[in-house]
Image (cartoon, rainbow, N blue to C red; front, side, top):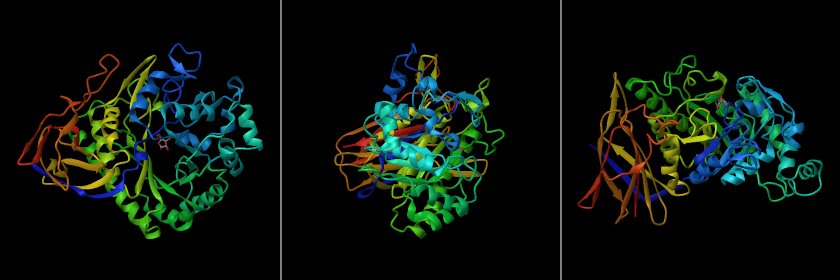
Length: 491
Ligand code: AHR
């Protein structure tokens, strides 16, 4: 038995809808096949983008989409991806499989895709191998309304009005694939490049600096000290790798309870990372003006057998659903600092919400968690305390239950994950400051830890109504089955 205290009488910060952001890179089959099939494709599409994927993503209410990378961003030259498609440059995607990138999906196509799914664009610029002029011209191309070389060129290429561009990243992983820089050097480059990322007309750009690799606290300290006043956001990248070993990350579908435990334990490390980076940021920014943007997170396994190692294609099981639920709960609980997060990646790469094969598409367990949790978008966080349940394995101990809750005018939303692979847990809920008359709930679980959806059996893991609760003397008692994600809505 465990106790859940929900302080519904003490609303805190708004849960920024952008915590539900996604990331799409020119990597493997994410953009090509996953989104873009071309206007002449037999796969039903709108302006070259597949209709099934658009419909599924619209349902998720994705607030923001990051593009074009990732490591790809720091070798992407945007001018190669505008103008008549047949004249666009063909380049080698050196980071991801050495395949030919024909640039058929460029700025216009990305912006159109964002319109179609209802997401705001978050464009990541090239610091590693691009120039200041190139970055500056890209912003002019996208956002300038009036006569200028880049705005004229945009219009020649078929787009009259400028686009609204709210989020711009000044480089990606510049401590690694984006140029192997030291923080002192990048901080200076950031100041220079960001200076020419202009606000044209009414368009206001939220500038995001490249932040630390996982636990590189020195990077955060230097960036905040040297460049803090020029940025609106600082990114953080952290992936869950079950074994902790990049050379042998583990299979997406073939794992035992020890690896299940280890995967969730490594996911919980996100809490410490956010706390520690936030503490450093707060030294320089006590009012929390600068957001921590977790713009790459999720599971990273060995690729599916027989697939291109550079394409990062992996299956997605109930374990991934738990990873998503835990991470989203952590982000909610740090809503004062974490104001955007982007799971990697949208389709067919790493912890995707969608997988495609030719004309077919399936939704992953991670998709369902995003769908169940979306009621938290824009609601007010309220504090939750979980007392009394632990999950033990080989002398290691973690919390058995991950929780977060939010309120809006009429609802109290509670999301709970039972991390234990075998044991259910009875949650006695002490809900302070709210009376409720109606309860509804949704659960995602399955018989096996390794359960996943395939093209042959696409509905092995799907949500269903949660009915395993009772109300005794005005107190809610809910029993969470082993390995489950539950969302409750109280009115
Ligand atoms: O998401 C895959 C890669 O992971 C990204 O390109 C890079 O930024 C990170 O290392």
